[in-house]
Length: 283
Length: 278
Image (cartoon, rainbow over all chains, first blue to last red; front, side):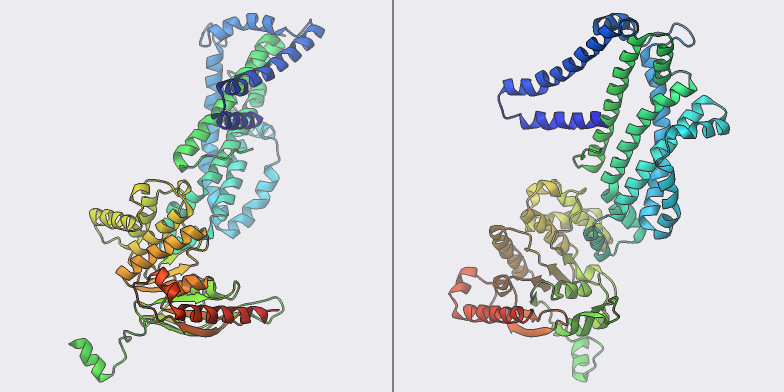
């Protein structure tokens, strides 16, 4: 989520400096962000110097990771795959769970937003389940499916539900009365009001829900894979730690972060395409 | 022939031309926790003639917008009757299209699509080409052809309201309702748009009921000004007939001594009902 904000700040800074000189532009978009990265690398280096036994220094980590970086799609055995394959496996789980979640959450959100009885029936359920860590669902999922992969997807599905339901319901119930008045004066039938007025009017809210859901889903998949094992970027982190190979953990953290950022940018672009409106930053 | 026969026989099945919109003993009240209903409008009687431009003026909170919404069918009257051409108004309908104070444009649709949505909903008997021509003609009428493919958040307030007006006129309502249509605009834009709307109306007359709080606007545009007393229990205090012929010229109006007489009269009315408020 914070990566998203950083991206937004980045964009705002980039925009505001467009009219200033190129030196300022260079400073704001390249030099200052680079200083931020430099700061964290220095900090890592200092800690690494104190913990020589476990922590690699940044140059050591880079050298150790060269194979991973240069060959992201190697296949050297049943469980020995390049980072690209691991990433694809994790993304597949996240996207499947997320899409199933959206498929359920958007209609449920609509129902809650439009009918008070549904709201009263489902609100307590949502309020209780929402604060539960999605990982707590893992044993239940394992009991149901008896397999790691569907269980992981199920946990992501549960994760994706709540923010999308809540934001969709909020969007549907807060459609401007002006729009509904227009529909009424035009004598628009109810079902056409739903897809010509209420759905497009609440799309920004729905997308906010989807963005938050996808962000959390990407956070959760790493933890789920640590527990379930198998092929995936999350299990990779835990596996490398078991081998005391912290260099690859550092690389994995970077890869997970960049992927999360790209996922958020992708959904923001989709929102822009679908709603014709500039997305507001979700947080 | 048939019509004249009916008239000579004095049969009142057809509403007469002069009584287009009739509001009778209209009361609007809201229930309160104490049990005594809060009466906003108390016994409004008003008749609008065909092709007449009537303004409703009064202080904010006097219920003039509520009255307009009841004519639109967006709010139910507590008691009383509103009829349009003899038929009772019970629900919203495209024969009484509204121009909204805050434009009521759908932000996910372009200017053209906003007008088209209304045309699609109301005139679904037209062919695709006829609808397209109708939309284009009305966009041209309000000088929005160049901005037809822009989204509402890309155009100015004055342009947005022109879209609202084009949308309202495109579906050919019997009665055009305008709820402070220029209220959200700056003074210069407001004057220009008043001129444009009046031009359109003078070239293509129809019945208009406009809510406003601007005496000059009411005098410039309308044939009659209905002045409401202050709420609660608001009523029609006075109806001012504006004697100037159309087409009107704002500059010429200002040189007419009757203009100031009427203006002062209307302002005095409003002042008087303002001071009794508290």
